[in-house]
Length: 142
Image 1 (spheres, rainbow, N blue to C red):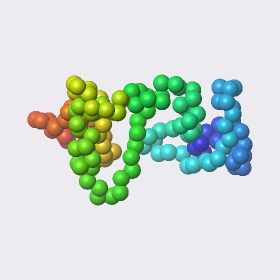
Image 2 (cartoon, helix red, strand yellow):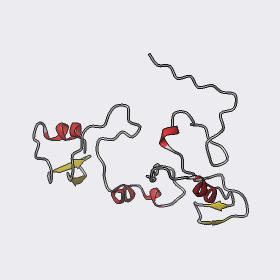
Image 3 (cartoon, helix red, strand yellow):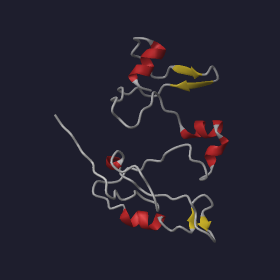
Image 4 (cartoon, helix red, strand yellow):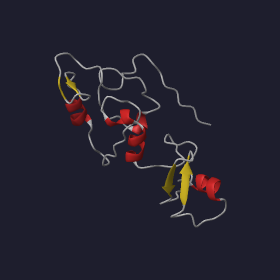
């Protein structure tokens, strides 16, 4: 959990590791780490994290590839060329929801897309970011 969340539950007590927190008065969780509060300008915001198995047990639809409840993040080594991997993912007859080739093209596509492009390229087609045709991006700085 974040420092802000730890303060919310435990006040000014700094020794919270190993303490328990009950969510919705149902499930108890043991605090295993406290991390610094995330900057407000980060794209990934959270107050606390739980094991995926806990989420999965509460959300039976989360078990298959045919759900879109969560995003998946992949950390690549610096300088990695994702184009060869995206080429493998781009087979429109391979349906990752069924894990097999289909007779007709799937409308669901996987592709790797760098976080550094999230704000500039947020429109997608053909299993990847859409080319910015005829558009301008203006970056203003004081």
